[in-house]
Every structure is written in structure tokens, then in C-alpha cells.
Length: 232
Image (cartoon, one colour):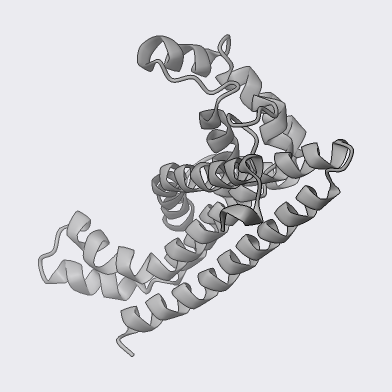
């Protein structure tokens, strides 16, 4: 396996997987909370919140990266606070690449989970409540299992989107080998270098395989979980 890719290519692949997994793990709880809020609650500004959540899908990724740079850079309000308080730095670090990946994948996660939340039959939750279950217990034992197919699908789609992120990442954390150079950025670098076509093609093939595997896994896992929840 080692001979298939160079050390630099393996480094980019490993960093991409690390960034995608961390971004998905951190984003998922927030995606579930926002999806439930949009699906279940009526409140002033709901359409505005929905628009803000989906804004990264329609904004140029460079704009998203620039906004992240302003907010989470060392001199940004959020970035400066996190560095002073927790020593957490995003700019020019892999953590910043994970943040960019999480932001870009977040709308897809919310959308999939929201559709699952809206499909839950409220009568099932009401039945559990009439049997004496508290709101938290109803959520954990009824609502959450019924939403699980959408949560799984959203997590996988968010992970795949994070792996493919380019514009926001390069704008926010630059293209530093071993630090922020994920697969898309490595492909870009190889295409700019003389004789880098072969390496670029190898990474393109790997990117396609990973993306396709994520989409297929999302469909298969979602269907299996749905059948298990339905008891079939």
C-alpha cells in the first residue's frame, strides 16, 4: 500500500480524513439541535435562521472562508477569545481546516436531519408521554431512534462535503503541506507544479472513490437503520 502514494500524498489523505471526521463529530450535535428547532418550533426569525444555516451552500466558498478569517483569526472576536481562554488556534492550523469543513457540510447535515425529524409521527411521542415518560426520555427512546436514518445520512453527507472543501479552506488557513493541505488543496498544488499531473490524477481517483463510497454508505446505512427502527 505504501508504494501506491508518495509520503506527501498519504499525508494529504490522512489529514483529509482527520479533518472530515473531526468536523462531522463536532458539527453533528449542533446539526441535530438546529434541525429539531427548525422542524418543531415556530418562532420569530425562523426563516432568517433557516437562511443563515443554508447560506454556505449558495455563497462563494471564498466568501465563507473570508468570513471565517475575520471571525476566527487571531485578531477576530471569536478567534481571539478562544486563543486567550483555551489556547485554541484556527488560523493556519488543521483545526481551521476542520472548522471550514464543518461549516460547509453543516447545511447538508441539517437538511437531512430536519427531514427525518419532520417525518416522526407526533402520535408516537404523545403515546410515550401518556405512559409517564418525561420529555427527555421520550426524545431519547422514541424521537431520536426514529430520526436515526436521517442523522446517519446527514453525518455521512457532511463528512463527504467536508472532504471536498477547497475554497473556504484555502482562504481561511492557506495551503500548508502537513498542516492544512487536504486532498483538494494537494490536487491543486500538484496541478500547478511541473510534472505533478500523475500525482494529481491519483488523488483525484481517491477523492472520487471516497465520495462515491460515502454516498453509497449513506444510502445503505440509512436504509438498514430505517428497517431496524421499523422492526422489519
